[in-house]
Amino acid sequence: MTNKSSNTSTTLELDPVLVSVMANRMDGIVREMTNTLLRAARSAVISSARDFSCCIVTGDNHLLASAEGLPVHIFGAHLQTANMCKYHEGDLREGDAYLDNDPYGGNTHPADHTFMVPVFIDGEHLFTTVAKCHMADIGNSIPSSYYAAALDVYAEGALVFPGVRIQRDFKNIEDIVRMCRARIRVPDQWYGDTLAGIGSARIAERRLKEFCAKYGMETVKAFVKDWTDYSENRMADSIRKLPKAHLVNTGRSDPLEGILPDGLELKVIIDIDPAEGMIHVDLRENPECVDCGLNTSEASATSAVVGAIFNSLDNDIPRNAGSFRRLTFKYAESSVVAAPTFPHSCSVSTTNVAERLVNITQSAFAQLGDGFGLSEGGTGLGAGMAVISGKDHRHDGAPYVNRMMLSTNGGPASAEADGWVNYAIPVIAGLMYRDSIEVDELKHPIRVKSLGLVQDSAGAGRYRGAPAQEIVYEPVENPVQVIIPCDGQFAPPRGVQGGHNGTPGETELINDNGAKTKLPNLVNMHLQRGQSIRGRDSSGGGYGDPLTRDPARVLHDVLEGWETEAKARDVYGVVLTGRIDDDSLAVDQPATAARRAELSASPDAAS
Image (cartoon, rainbow, N blue to C red):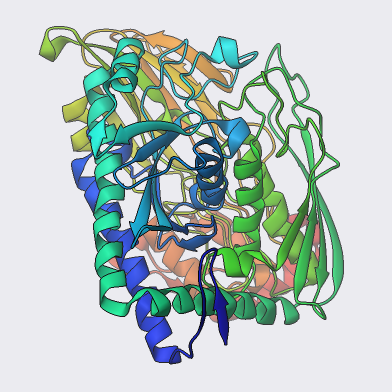
């Protein structure tokens, strides 16, 4: 086979075993990047919640390796490296590092600071290592890296860096550091996270040099071609297993009081061509840009749809430029989906609308029939994922800002499995960590009063969605500013193939006298001592008829406390006998058969 790079052409046959070994070594390098960043970062949103991703991109700007990177982060990384090359054409050199967070130029949203290091082998720019980190504070006009209500980028207030060089000859460019420290509320935390991001990219630079020294330039270039070609073939083979189809699906984001009273109607059109082994996506029939932070960048919107497509195909397809060749996209101009125009804000580009795009794409595949696609997963950054800030009485009033990850939404059911409990949101799909309560209480002056799963909240089905979670927390001493850019509090996550819908979320303020007030889906308030916030996240939708669920699974859910005996009987048609408190609870098989026959004859009783 012939391998062509930008500078060199080689003809080299590689053993498939060697290609596999080299591919796994690439993922190993990305995992070492991940561990470096996780251990070295200062903010809890990175070091505890793991809201970051690492990957390796080729020198000619094609994604090569991403390991367990978040889908919303990695699918657009090559757009950023391409801009880095464009902005600094002829001036890239070893020892450089670059910072990019420009949503109009390939990044997701301004909160994701992306650190890029070009890697040179024998004078050739062969790779770029990428570490993308969601920063706790980015200089927004409010103490939050999410600002859904921002009317434009000026109201948002974020510092934006379009492919800016921040290191030359392995040394910081102090002008950039000084500028950030002057504008960011927690400068030491930001600087620590920045050093961790650059350090992560530098670790990969070192390992890639070792990799190339071991295998040689010609072998490495042949590997890149063979691995991406193999990935393309795997993707094409998986698409060929699907029926030819024209799929259309829609969904609606939550309304924003005073800004978008009806929310946004979103549409995804998918054409599956198994003969060609191609999937064509049309995103043009979506609203124009809106005067708030919900506009999605090209990277965010595309990655949302790509991630959902991967969710619906074989689960071992490599995620790189090779497999992406089997997908095409059409975009509108000046659209809330994938085509924001300056100065429209993209502050929550990675969440609200992007989450809906994941849901409507993966549930569209369920239109192919039983066994295809997924239901909708729970959406929204609820109270347990709020950005909190204030002055810490334990440290002489020192300021703090952090995005928590304490409670999460329930995951969608598939044709093969129940939803994942610690799913978080669709663009994350279980790849982030849930915070430790104890660590968050040590880092910030809050007290978590309770955290648990919500009984009977999951969307029922042959496979059920994951249940919702509920959290209650309060300030310890000083007021705590709480900012929640929530979605998912109106329309429930939808079930498919006869599966039931999940349940939407909700947020309440509880005063010191116990009085409760329902809060809007956008929250920006100061929580006073004696007050607390109760947040309930949304759950996942179900897949398939609940009356076909294995009764043993229903019994397990009741024993775990996730479902009640009443729901088992009235929704799943499973009659239990015995007691839950003495380990005698069991399925009454004859009564269950009779109950399911009764419910099947009266569909309204099972809805």
